[in-house]
Length: 242
Ligand SMILES: [Zn+2]
Ligand SMILES: [Zn+2]
Image 1 (tube, rainbow, N blue to C red):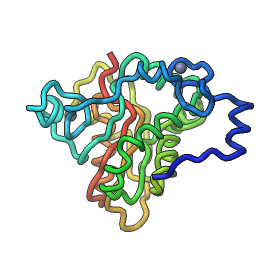
Image 2 (image 1 turned 90 degrees about the vertical axis):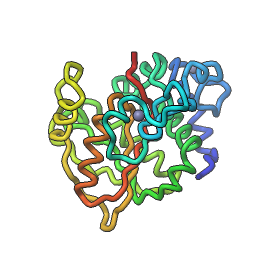
Image 3 (image 1 turned 180 degrees about the vertical axis):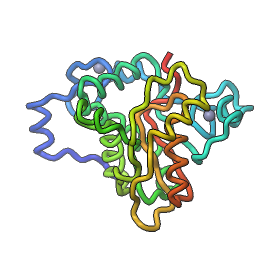
Image 4 (image 1 turned 135 degrees about the vertical axis):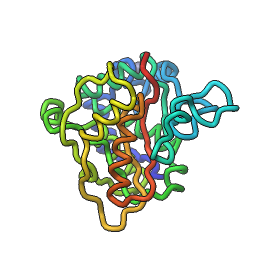
């Protein structure tokens, strides 16, 4: 894992464009930090015990898996999830996507590497694949937050990023009314195989939020059908966001 070292240019940029806090949006003090010391307390890191599959907190360590993962076993090995999707996280993730606050992802990617870097390196992913967004969304938003995250994490951990590993074929309609089987069915039609470097056996899939897990599951199934042997996930948030 790389230690982020501040160059003279970084410091100069910091003076001209002060860093904004991913939680309150204000200028972060002290300079050089990525989040206000008080705001970091508003985020809720996932605590033990958590589901060994999706990374969601579970009520008691008597349960290895959450209700959902024990009822619907997943095709990915494990999802590393950093934060519970509480109000502060929800607002922050929405600002990244809809207010173009991609600089907030510096904090989240660094925090994710600190917490899961060792475990990820132990899993030996050949590449990191971001969950793709549809081209029309990419045009209106200007970037794919999952790809920005993947690139920052890849740089930090020294793992290659392969944004073309999966394709987004179509947009998905709002999924709130659907049950999990329908969601999955819908999503499997939304993604398609892209291209991976020859011999790719292990993939780390990166996305911003894990809610029902249908997206990660659909993407994993496609990667497995492309000959990948093991898929891990990394999402900044996990939970239903309510
Ligand atoms: Zn703040
Ligand atoms: Zn689970």
